[in-house]
Length: 194
Image (cartoon, rainbow, N blue to C red; front, side, top):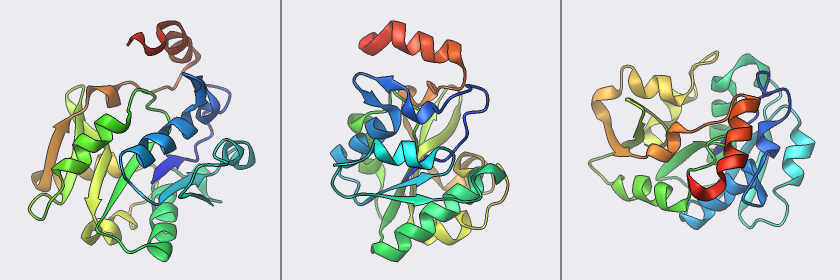
């Protein structure tokens, strides 16, 4: 599941549509998930939903759902996406990712997915001295994630009461996200040489 509903207030334009290495970020994220073997892929849209959805056309096994309450924070998008996924697919685990981590690729996602097993049911990225998403949650945790509220996303949940259950995988690529015009410019100037 890719969370791509935000309004990019600090950036001033939809960061989901920032092009990196030939593709908008949301399409890159969806392709990375597919290439890592995570199917189906559910993309949660909100602000600029029509524009963002158009960038996903032609990708197999990619579906979209619109969170009408995206402005209330990450938790509502997480719940919207999880509900939609549970309606269409049986589930062993859910990979949760963001559209604005441009350096997270299929190889990084495969490392996360590869650490999930019967004894390790929550696997999260470790980067910049913290843990967060992308992360994989066994389906037994979905109900709890759906009850988060406000701007509390999966990352805060991981670092909270469930921290003792989390297996971490070092994913330094996840530490690079886009929130400002300067970060977008840096991504463009550095390109794939990061």
